[in-house]
Image (cartoon, rainbow, N blue to C red):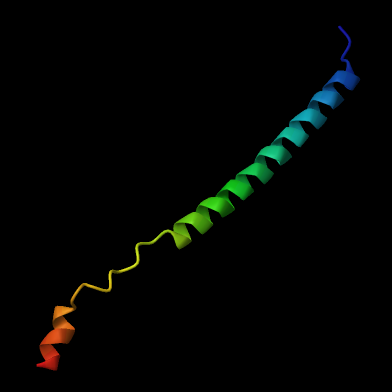
Length: 58
């Protein structure tokens, strides 16, 4: 049985392109998730009273 180097070469190129595509897509998703987590915080309500601060005012 003879090794078909053309088919093996094409397969290697396809695998390399697939790995590069998945890596690039993963980096985009990681950046989106990082931005979402960094900007997704609940702002404190202005109506809440800080008891430590209000005790010193009296």
